[in-house]
Length: 481
Ligand code: NAD
Ligand code: UDX
Image 1 (cartoon, rainbow, N blue to C red):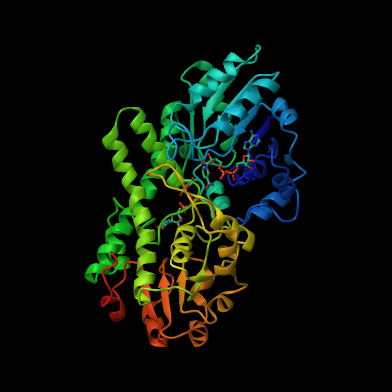
Image 2 (image 1 turned 180 degrees about the vertical axis):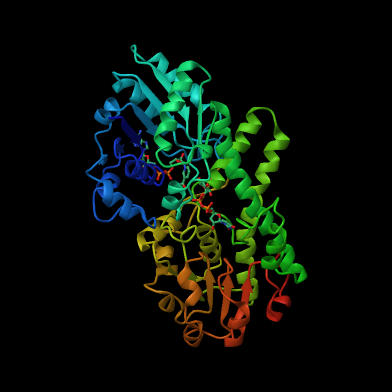
């Protein structure tokens, strides 16, 4: 029986290994983590992450050929294939702060593998890492090998949160990079056999190590670039009376461009796009390519601009002051169908409103009050001028932020509603009921284009929706673009 051990039981390690276990009953899969609460969560009825369809997959194979454990050393030692799926956040201090990937967790995992291994291993990079990381990992393993032979493979993960199970069941492609030596090719073939249990052969791409590592950063940069492009056009739509939905539809009908991933929004969030583009920027700078670095940096700048443009629009529409006004925030997660709030645009938007002394009431179906408080109390990193910006004090946060049990409660006595995540339930709310319980004029700022502006205007709302022709009310306001 092939034994797989995955280091890191997070958003990637957990679902990916659960699907491998489901599709490959002859493989024993153990997911290990240094975080005891995380492992306890994976072994409980309430999994530590929310992902549609995941409960079902885990229930089918947990205790059969899927195990979650904190006994990191034992399981790594026993495995034939070790996936490393630890976090690789952006460095916040030292060389490359604000851009470079922090490989501390990765390096400590690699050193631990070298310490506990007594048999040959295939080590698979699942985390997103800078191109050439495999070389560094190889050096650590080889210099501490005590006779154990290693093959390093790059097998980046392309799943998106909220659709992880679906993406893993039917991936657009699986990418495996390895050394171009007989041993390297054999290792690639072994991993390929695992995926071939359910992924059609023509969807499994094999490349050299550096192409695989770089393809992941490139794919995320291209995807994020699409959103920044459509968001940049959304600002122009608002200024001209064009409608971003119509423009995106027309542009996306060009088969070379395609219709997906062209929804204008208050900005992209999530643990990947910003971090991976910053990482790409840093790599370009290190290789002496400042123009290329500046090109990708702009994708993030437009994203920041989109968030601050939204806040400015809220404040200027409401007579240039939101001080003491209750604003309902619907949605805090970075996208629907996840409780993940890493780099969610809601953090910047809420901080912007709090800076103007608004009182905000947040409702999100999957985000707890504790998570919201943690996120809003976090120091914000200024990427352009590496330093931490001070958030509101705990006392001010408690005074200005509340979490509501539902959307109606959040909107009761509010002056405005801001929609920041595209949860399906926000499309079918009784907006008349909300309107009746709000101060007038009642505003809706839709950062995800989930409501029909015409219908809400009929109810009596003043409506702003990203990239949509402006309400007469907003036309009289100073330009926000
Ligand atoms: P995560 O923070 O949810 O999970 C990482 C886990 O690794 C944590 O539970 C942490 O406790 C554990 N860990 C860290 N160091 C460890 C060690 N030495 N030994 C054992 N466990 C250790 O992160 P994630 O979202 O799953 O992302 C993991 C990697 O996958 C990142 O490189 C990320 O860029 C990449 N990725 C993420 C996504 C996504 O949608 N989240 C998609 C594709 C790729
Ligand atoms: C992304 C990549 O899609 C995935 O392939 C990679 O493995 C990890 O990073 P994820 O961050 O989980 O996945 O979610 P994604 O669906 O890509 O959304 C990222 C952000 O972009 C979200 O905030 C989302 O709301 C926003 N977005 C996405 C838009 O604003 N408009 C769109 O059209 C699509």
